[in-house]
Length: 186
Image (cartoon, rainbow, N blue to C red; front, side, top):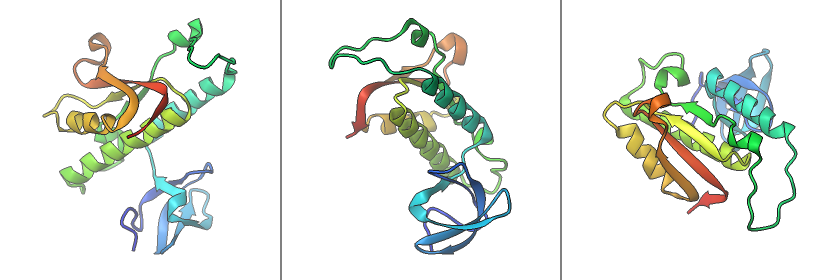
């Protein structure tokens, strides 16, 4: 039985634009029913837990922004930021649980926190892979547990600086992450 996935869980396929629900687990394969009603088997490594539609729209918008601009050839060691790119809004990821899942009443505090941190890590990997330099994680104020977990996560990466996001725009409940081109996990 899979530790990460369970029957009835919503998932997404990594290398395809497919969403679905897990209908069977027969390791190393997981069978899903797509939103179009097709039954397809994937390896566990080919799927991830579904992300919310809000985050998905943001990722599509960011991907389109990055895809429209051609990367200029720059000498190694010099970084030139186009004036257009300086003023681009950073990628935002809202980690409030109600933005990530439809219903969280059945989830324990630990499960909620794990989902939030996993989502943050996935979005960080996405930003690194797409060479997105700024990302804002909206975590809220609360008791500060999620914020501390995020700081612990960010500290595990070389080439990442993080700090409180713009107070006027986000209040005290957001962290801005700046990703250098060569960021990688320690």
